[in-house]
Length: 428
Image (cartoon, rainbow, N blue to C red; front, side, top):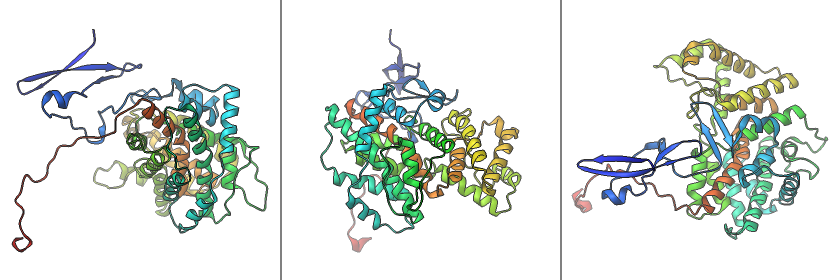
């Protein structure tokens, strides 16, 4: 017998079905609430207790520190898979065979050329423009060069749209970084893998041959996998709700990039490095700043520790912490900012205040350290996050459209003025 939830409002009682997910998550299905109750709605600022959809893509258990893509643990995927395999898994539901992966990569490479008029749009941005603004604008601009809307009921059209954006976004990412660094815009090489090609497009110089460092490549591959999807977060929800109006894939992705930009979301890894820089400039006394973080009357916030969803150690942080140490050891970098980061990490892992509250370093803390060690400018950190999140956004958009989900239209509780009489301007 199906479970029922009962709601009492005044002297009226209402019953609603309880739905269960494949991991035994429970949800009260209230889609009929407003109709049967004569206008009553729920209110849930930030949607912290509201399930906006059913999804088969990512499972997250924040209390236990569990993250899985399509049933595969994030630990297995980060250790054994390539980013392009994980992208295929998220978008199409299963890990690819060798033939499927080869075709996917080949089709992506065939679409890795951006219309030259997009360069003119990029040229119009000042060198000081934030690369996230550039990436969002150029992604939206791709719609102008691909004006036909995608027929979501056509597997062929959907596939073409997917490989097109998977091919073009890394080019836009590299162009955004090269503009910051004053380097000429370029394209990658068909002889390289997806992640290697990203590195080459970003870092290669016209007067020397670029060699891929395998340890750095492995760390970047892991970072992209760890960022590939994370359930119904702010940017993913944005992609889905924009797409629910039947806006195209590129327009929906552009909206997701803008949502990711915020310092409480994808911009957190940039905020971590800016905090570390401020601590270094103030003398590098990490004990002083740990005390400030524990002082409720001090406005200082310790960025990169704890997580809004994970009430345990962020499983992604465990993986990328190892990669961060490997990169720093291999590159032999002597950087006072990274010394501050190591000191903060040790303080937090051994301080009862942080341990008791499970305020462990999260993925944003370690990803910023790796990106800095790689020579990626701090303004580019969120752009790299967007590159990793691309397949997750695509998968969520595709699932939403194929599931025929209705247009997103949240309700509200009005708290403004009641009916007022209009006064002519002379009477005001």
